[in-house]
Length: 332
Image 1 (tube, rainbow, N blue to C red):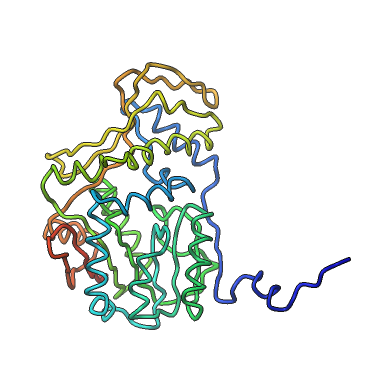
Image 2 (image 1 turned 30 degrees about the vertical axis):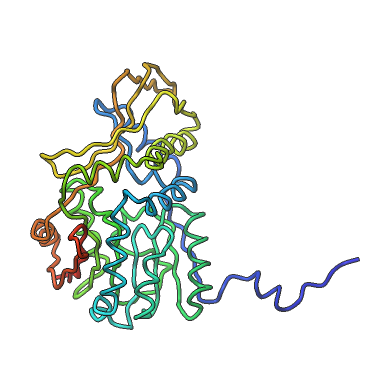
């Protein structure tokens, strides 16, 4: 006996009419080449974008709720208290682009005050992007969402399948701090090209502060950041089709005062080799894989960096304790 699906049930199974997906994620072969290149280098490194598989994305959400991790609380306080003022810099005919959108939680603070013509989250984790986009559509059914599965670090224009529209960008969370200065300037130049003339960029930037505060934020007592860092090995192991033994590595994070940055590494605890795609990877005890930098800026220092990429600072907001800053920039 066949059961009949009701019209309401059938409708609930269809994608929302205002929700569109665009997949331009790079092929695995390119990812393998990129990872192997970093692991075969004299100083081993892996891009922090490989933190964000499904498990890594969940772990990062846990990090943002930790007592030691001040970044998210400070930024949320700015968005909660200054959200209306921030949104005055945006126009309603704008497509609001969010590189590295993750769970799309912070954009909801702006959507309380301002509804753009459309919202375009860009996220490399397909699972995470789909889940966040569907949830956002449920919360804001009138919002048109163009969800783009891509590596935002290499985009300087939206995919051809995304409709043309004036653009602004929302780039919270201090992600810009993960890039070396030259890389950060290049990323901002890519955003400049994407936004075009008179485009607005709303960007979060972590401020310079006491090393002890920074150390605690990246070495939390519960070990969530350590699990997040180690999970990168699980992710790249699947891409390389060669699993890593996580017991052979440990989380290492410290403040590099000369560079004004936190460095995250995976330190090898036992010398060993691995055969991957015809290549021999050699790991020596005490050697590290550099997985992330997190640069800290003064307001003036970041203003100078952004100007190199063609952005003028229009307004800056900070939290009460001046732990974090949020800037409105405009392309020139």
